[in-house]
Length: 147
Image 1 (cartoon, one colour):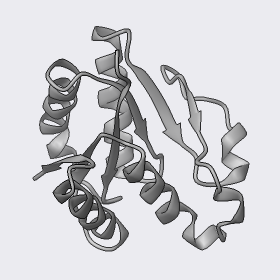
Image 2 (cartoon, rainbow, N blue to C red):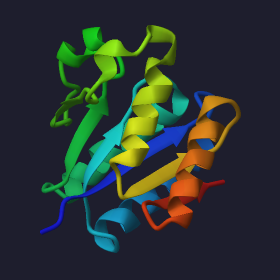
Image 3 (cartoon, rainbow, N blue to C red):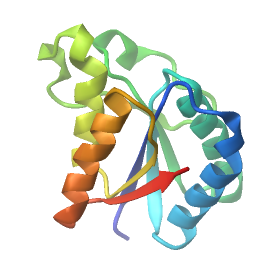
């Protein structure tokens, strides 16, 4: 079976009111798109919502894998969160200056994922979504925007 990967990007100020829509999107990615691996960061409201939804999804779909994105070398050894299968530290991040690490790690994930579920805010999350949408036009990734 092909290992289909999904990444998440969203504003650190995401309202909890999108949780149901997020849960439906995750379920669809598992049941309709065949996604088996999900990766999420850990720096804001959106990431917290995603982690909760993924934990619930893993109870129903025990074969899916959940990974925490670690943009900093110090975090790659961080204890894995409960219900997660590990941490992912992207290749080449050792040379990225700390102020650019999250953006670079997010770009790496967009380049190495089949799917992106996003709640578009402003700033860097919007730039990453725009980057992913450019890749989508080339057939390299499928983007799901939550509203």
